[in-house]
Image (cartoon, rainbow, N blue to C red):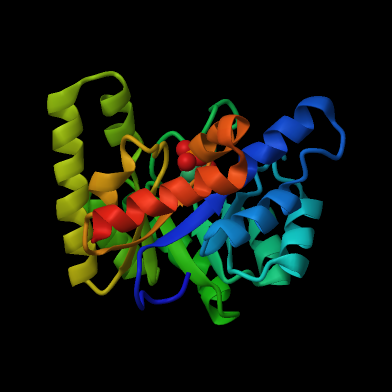
Length: 250
Ligand code: PXP
């Protein structure tokens, strides 16, 4: 989303509202309605991942989001020709390039940028030309960060999945190591002039140490919020995340 100019931004990922809708193949729950509620509850942006297999978000959802959102859309996509065409047609505020495997349940790791520098540099150039901010979803690894910088990305999003998994499985030493990597790598990326985002697997229990990293300007959070919405409603679930983020930042 835009250059950091204040509080830590929250991008709400609405993919899994679409997952529930698609379980029955009907029209509800409507991801556009979720986006509207998220905006009202304090989301600074909406994130949606159009997967190759359209397992959750559909082309029509992206179309609808582009028409109705009042906050920026962060369009997550794989580095494929099909997705590039769609992004060039819609020109969302931001695109986040993610790795994608059909058989995975979710985006399992970060993008391998270092080994694909040439292809990715050519891939993102037209997206930048039409005005999209290009973000690359990567592991907290200096090789990948340097490569993302070299190919001309303006933003990196650090994958917080390893940190969250270690927390969930009570592997505490590993969790602390992962957190330390996230801290060090956000400072490193910032020193190169990259805008730093983070996300994947974050919950009320894990968000605060990441939110406290001063170089991180945006968190993208989805699955936990959609789950929590079952119990307390989407607006209150997001408002609580917002509160925890702001408290960690203060
Ligand atoms: N950021 C990126 C790049 C992602 O791919 C995802 C998952 O789609 C998220 C953030 C949000 O992860 P979660 O749904 O686990 O909060």
